[in-house]
Length: 570
Ligand code: ATP
Ligand code: MG
Image 1: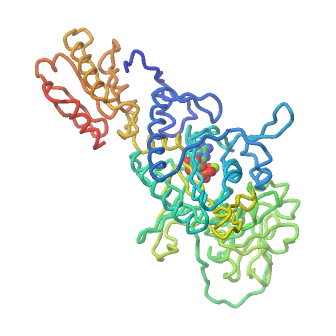
Image 2: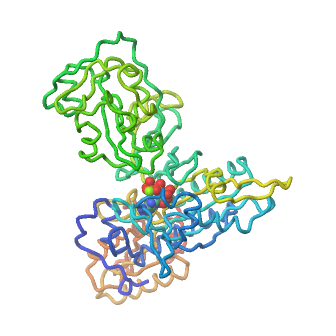
Image 3: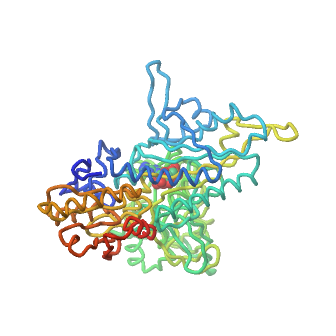
């Protein structure tokens, strides 16, 4: 490839909406362009990276016996009605009608579709196990598309689905996918960690792991143990109940607390310790208002609330809704609330506390000496707390640490959630009908590319891991007026190309500084400089993008092999 021919329009200024490195750099270096909110066109350089990631995925999936298929993007409403998710999926699903008025969606995922395909043809235990996958665009009308390819509305996903006879089979399929994912992300040159995860709307009740690329810009928060190998998405991290020392129950009192809107204000004003206070968070959901209560110094875990109450999604409650339920923001409390009108979810540790202070559902007032059981009745008592740094590890008790991660892949055990709802059954050895036991496994291909940039960049640009770099080597003729060295550069370019290296020559009539700047921005793993000096010394100057290390290779040597050798370690 010649830079004069390459379609990689660089930008001097990136739009201010590009907040994180990958978003900025992929735009600046001409890898992609935004088409509309949350949708991008991949330009040639990005597409080369995507194809390399896909090739790695295909190899590792095929190695595990998975088989590639391609399903339609547009899916009929009926199959989603059959699984019960047409209603449940919510606003993230893009729905449309054809000219006959039939309803469809643009696939946000393909469990329904693949289950329909398999159930129509698989009859016998002899046809199982089966693992089918595709690499395809998915559509999700995300509430907040952002960070470029990290959270877009049209994105490329590898989705795989396994069908087994029983749970032991699923266990094996799951483990194989877990191992394949570990290989895939390792080969992509990523620093990642598999963590225990919530299985969300797609999953059944089963286990799930997310593959997290560790990066400050990650949207996910993970906790990991400082002593053992426990690691979990903070959404999922389970907490034990905290017991509080016994105390005599004091009579409940209503007290004036002017201008005390936060827990800190209230505790300071009433001189109450924070572990005798309760924090409230109000959500609205399809089941109505949900009031959640945790200890004053704890935080509410939204996902645990969703799972406890069994709703599809929650949003912060509007003040009008609070007023209708007889309460007010900043002063919410469980005392006197009608559990028939409001869903009251109380954290398990709150139930152990005594003589608590909490809002009195009236502007400017709190109650003190509230005692659970005596003074209020929860609809649900559950673990709804968000794990914090320093909390005890659920496996070994050592304090946990927090880190941020980018979820590039997830593996789920679905068990019979879809096969039961959609009647995907087979006949076992005894001729008895059994539901297939399923798993599903996703990788965000575009997000993986973006995550690679997040982990591999510096002030000058991107630093591609060799395995997924758009090209391996850039040859830079540095003196455009010097014909002899330009001819040498051309010869080297041809030699490297013949040797099977993916090579680009910067044949523009530009100053070396401009060429070097673009080389660093695009992030070619190796840069070869050719000038008049090359001819006099008989040596090629090779610079490693990642380390800045410069190596001289004799022109008379097999420098192509030497470059290949260097790439292996990058
Ligand atoms: P998230 O929690 O980030 O929304 P998810 O749990 O909804 O992700 P899955 O349904 O497990 O995602 O999809 C499989 C993979 O697809 C994810 O691990 C992620 O890498 C990718 N992915 C999901 N949503 C998006 C998106 N909006 N843009 C880009 N990639 C995405
Ligand atoms: Mg999502």
